[in-house]
Image (cartoon, rainbow, N blue to C red; front, side, top):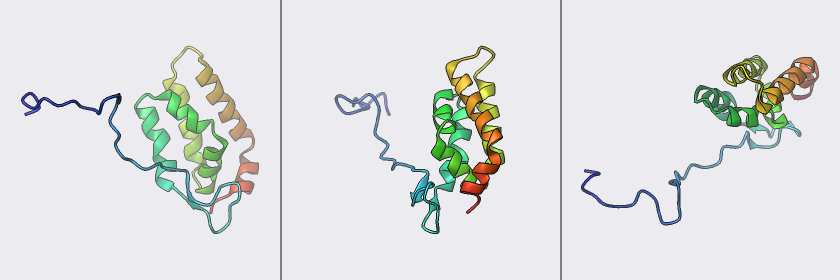
Length: 127
């Protein structure tokens, strides 16, 4: 059927289609630096975004999340600090053998989180 119908895939000037997917913030309500009862974390994004990025080989997207203080706070707030350390290891592993700037940045953040785990747990602890 697609061979018979002659229509452009995208509108003029577009390089990709707009899937009309709403933004997925880390916190649906409130902010992680404020905490409190008004905080409603987006657990689906927190649990799945980096996992899917590393499985797809998208190191840039994974590093963008893993090297974000807000993402680290979100992981601690929902009690997934062990998963966070595993995500760092997986992202560093897919970087390959040659040290890249992203790999070095990931290792620095992983070391920082590892050293300051107790402080992060006390500050952002499980909701």
